[in-house]
Image (cartoon, rainbow, N blue to C red; front, side, top):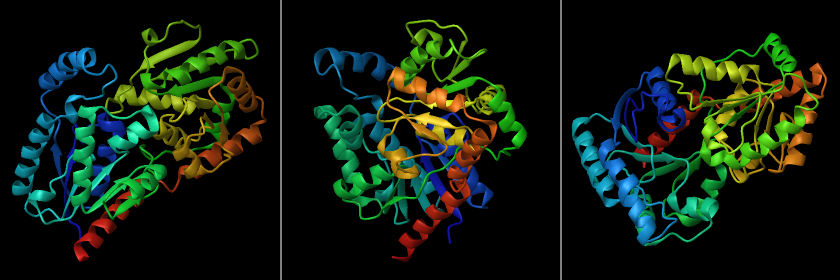
Length: 380
């Protein structure tokens, strides 16, 4: 039986802004199940991170490789720092039943015989193969080797996405790799017919994503100018990107920047936008803010997203709660027209299908599965 868990995270797991809310909801759910949670923040001093990422990394890009992603958290200096934190935590929390590292870059197995599980989205080598589509440089390669060594000694790996799980089952030396479904990072929310009717009356579009999703936003902005010719009071709310991050300024586009859900005012604004949006749009190729999509779906919002592998494997080749779209202005404009022009009863159905599609992805179910894996490890 698992009664106490020690969780290592990069950032404070009590803070909603840490890694897309995942550590917060994970640890809070464990506590709601009467599990004692020891939180260990392995984030190093921000001064050292700044010196490396702003100065050293800049020099590396000039003299070594202009595309290198060798940030401070990939270096031996970071590993040494985390190692000391983990050793101290193992000695301090002697009653721990399981150690959970929210990363594929560190775990404390060399200091304990208790179950050790790594939990994250994807490995560094997957990042190169799937996103960057290039070979890692020599510095990047040493972090890949570090992760592979850790995979040999961990008791289990849990990944957030199905295609990453398939990738690791081929590439990794870890014998226990799990995809447990996905999770919605949101408080309980009641979707009513009144809410749906209000969304239907609004001509509001919401986009959520950081600067890496600018390719999707730029296409949406071009599409938005076409749509304004037909729809009165059309509004676009952009969460996660600032106005200065785009080259062209548009009327009726609200840039909110990053809204921190751990701040009550930001959280209220975030969900006010989501709950009043008629449709969510992000068609960035290869990846389109997966966690944000699940969140808006839980709040009953139809979606238009790119057809990337993880989403497709989770929800299928066709989605009745919205549609897939290539990142093309003409195609996207038509897809948004299709949502805006349907009858209320058809729109209500899409909203309910969107909510129903993610209903099983509760943190309570997810934590139960993690605990089951930990118990299986202990029995071996």
